[in-house]
Image (cartoon, rainbow, N blue to C red; front, side, top):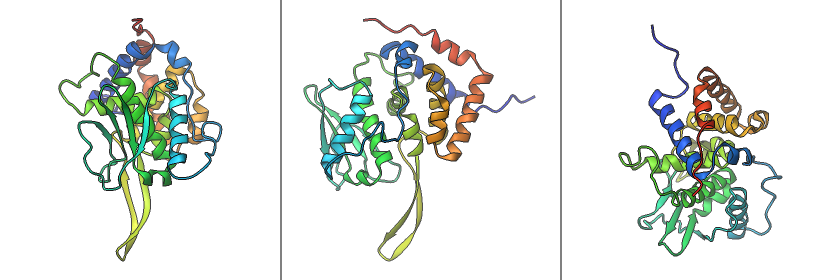
Length: 259
């Protein structure tokens, strides 16, 4: 007899849970998550900024930084050159098949986050990009690598995406994980789609389900602001957690480091 199909592949689900435990040990346990807001794409969380261009990007960036509890963390925001040139040995958030959206750069003295200016036309992706790059900033303070990173370097980026969920931004990130948009160039026009970042939509929905279970935030709020098909996938992710209660119970028992 075959067992019930899981929401995520077993090895992916196992990594998600292990990485949640790793973050909770180093960034605070279930008590810290209980104080973390579920960040939603509303005027309450993101008041309309004044100005235009880089001034708007800065206002949104500082709002994301505040919501992540990083107000005192020094960091400079820089608009990227549209040429998408290489910038060195730094982390990047890159939509698949598209130019680099943002980078996190640190030389040990100064921290700089960059962003592609065309993201101003995609507020959801702009917010998710800023949350991702700031999550890099946080994870760089943890002395041990995330589970699996010593074997597979891309794990660092996946762990950073999970940290975006840890800081309450999974609804926004899930909504921006796949774009379907109209295009027109050089006499051609039509529709194109593409994945954004490193998580699939199912990966974000599972991460959101774990966050809701651990933080106690209102799932109705999350469902209300998700794309309809993602709200359904969230229900399926939550059903998986209900079928395997030991996953969440094990995370509730994780003791945070106090050093």
